[in-house]
Image (cartoon, rainbow over all chains, first blue to last red; front, top):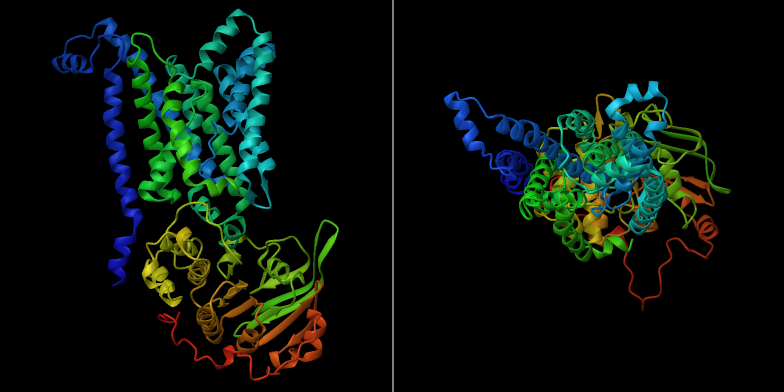
Length: 352
Length: 270
């Protein structure tokens, strides 16, 4: 009998099957992303040419290899980073409404990036040469890390996170970051202003291989690290005390979660600006579908996050082609109703 | 192998919650900690589990609680909290499986189902934890705790169940059922320490009782030794008579006379 029960109630098998399905969907969406765009270059034509041994035209090479491919890779990286850091942060705060973009972590990362863009030139030349392209993502990481730390300290007392405090502290942090960002914009020269504006739109449009090389390692590292947090995050769902009783090193877990959230969301913000709601929508849908076990939730969130961000990017590119919408607008239009829906369904959470 | 606490003091800010407490519990026995609200029962439990910072020394199964690694402690003792709020929609079996996180039986998929059967929640595996009643949630947590230290005694010696008010939210049938489970655990050689509020159940099930008052133990011994009029009246601050029966017009009932397990949906024993 118990064997029957075990198969009926086991959501783990479903969650593992979901890895395969989401992987396939991501592959399909990736191909679509490579083939769609403002120029007439189609992947089918290029593949045909490659198969028949014909040389690609200069145009096709540039569009596919220098524009669409880095954009695709960056989209996948950013989508994974946003969704996984959302899931990890929700696990850390024990709350499905925590999202780096909403509670001020994105704003902190943004502030770090803006400071780096505007004040980076004041750093000693040796240091500038040493960090090179990494300056902006590193600064974003530091910004994200410090705002996550502040947020956690402010909203968590004796292992319990007050949701109201968390959201309000997030607003305050966001406002402070926005104010300092404003000062930086005021200080910046024309070229920096241009950088800031493009960066702040929240878009994958400026994707280059250089950006991929800069953000990629940080994001991959954070995602790989988050894998080791999943068992601990499961235990943490029962509360800090119980997690401790279960043998989890709670302090190390919290530090690891904060670091991985900061690295992933900091790197994502540094290369793509503020893209909100992916970190809320993706883990929430997956919890409904296959349960909240972080061991399967985190990989699934990475796959679905990448897929959703690519889809949003395709929409952003095609809706007003040949111009494009900032992708942050697309994700917010899709994501904010979902956020409100969670809020209404689980109102009790906020009254804690 | 036992639990030994020596001169344990705990303060929150300027308030002293525990003041130089000495406490002992032996494996093979049910040791109850009783006392009025705010007497430091739960805080003593938290010192034993390593949840609060304390001065003094607490030793559990040969491990110094203050310096032992979390996983070392977790493999020797499991802790049932007063109440648990769960952050995400885990179902019952997933909660029980969390007991396997650091246990010796990490891959035994049958164990959680056997534990659920033991607490009388056989058909509940696929239910959502958050949709259960308080009493059912508490029994699910007990199943999780049992899974963590399933063998009362293993090759390293006895294991421990530390229970903070395990039965306060349960009806009488389930109170008896839970107390029977933990008593069997102790009879099989394991150690059980429970913070209890119900003095009748304490008298029935505990082998040793420590009575706390204002952060200090005031009496320790068998229920018969410590549960006497003067001690209880003094500790609880009201006139209490042990063994007195009310006049015939008021009904009363005592767990002593209940036939154990009858009526409760009992399963196989751990």
